[in-house]
Image 1 (spheres, rainbow, N blue to C red):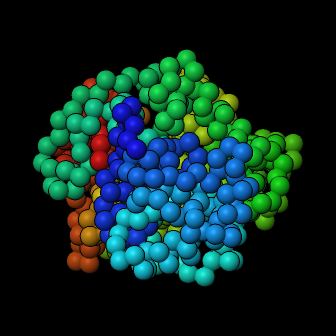
Image 2: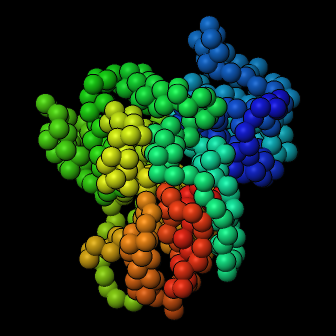
Image 3: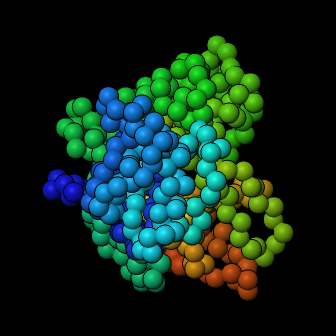
Length: 426
């Protein structure tokens, strides 16, 4: 079912690998990020749960006769499977008794609101794959001359030229990684993120748990979340921000429920705190760092565009960090890794720590560019590296300042790599 116009995704290889080792693979991620299209490239048959005019009939069929929906050539794609969670147990049973792998691909843009009728966790039968909007490498906006994988493998040098200037990077941030926007002309590509925020506020957030919410309240929360991107803000701080910028605010309890709903539909993806072994007993802050799954959600929620970012470099810098975290997450997933954030009680902070399953890790600071900012980022990285206890953990595989602009990628005398995001790939 391959589409000749399909832009390859980093997740393609991960999906193929997971299908070789499990009976079913569940692809989760935000709406419009390309889950179904990616799954279709490997599926040999498809069942669309939300097909126009057939949704209710399909849900009833899944409850009464799930075996009918599962009939078809393998791998069989069940799109938006969360519409009928009862399929989970039927697929698990098939995976148990078929004696082979790669039977089913499930895609879902929301965590099912009700799993009470599901009796099995899926452990050992299912693999999970998280998809996000396109990285700059996937959208064709990065040259890919610097490989994150090669940095982990001990690359001594990097080479690469970046074609993006500040204005273009501002556009790419506001456009986001939505495949439909990537494939559109620039003059209409920016509409996609605004349409996405409209859909979240008016309809999609209800799919998280079936609770009806005020769209205007959702918008207020999204604006506050956008203003606090890259921070460890508490729910109380979010509420205070809403009160300072809006006419009224939700209670902290309600804000917590709204944020949980946004996480369940993959709009919000906070970053966990990294907890390394240190030489001293410095307290490490354990709060999650606030991020959207794509930076364009923040700009759309705030109602701003590329020119606004260029005229407000502080905001540009904060939201550029969200773009870099998105891309690093895409690449880290392909390497069996996770992206964390580090901050201690003294304010020493590292924007991203890419930590692999085998214990290797890289330290990353994010800066718009310029000699002074790059030097500041490099100093932060070397300071953090000096605090780590290498008798109990490995040395970092690399330290990198990731920039928005800059003519080329290079290695500094202190060993820190400087890499424009427009040169990076997995």
